[in-house]
Image (cartoon, rainbow, N blue to C red; front, side, top):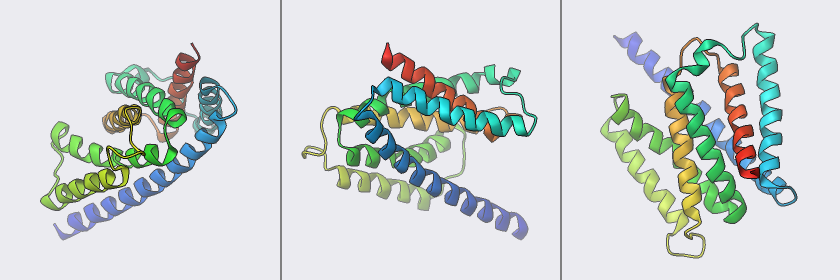
Length: 203
């Protein structure tokens, strides 16, 4: 019993560390997308980002002998994941271009909070009162930084909110993706969705 609890805590800490690192890198990605979109069409930026990232993950998958298009990529969770990924990329990229980067980035930080709350409801994952309290404090923190009704928040900020919901849905769908699909294959298809989103914006 003690060993199980220690393992769970270790896994939780590792997961929190990976999520923190991911959010930091997302912030860097946001800045790069914002800078790129100032001199190039938004759709073209997304397509190039998607092709570049997809090539990297395709190389990783191939180096391990993994198929890029196994039958499992057509499973319902993967199709739902692709829809949310495209939805998130479309609205968040529009938010990058039309609203201040600071507001967009703060809204994105709410995604992990939404994922935890939704996981408790959809997957019956255990979320104690401490985590619920942390979620509430985190949401309040987002509102404090955004200051709705002030100059940093506008109706266009709803684009970022829609994008954040898309990313949260993507993460939840990834949670139930077939276990046979590796991280490299999931990453490859995530970047393919970015290419689709860029193509839709271009059209």
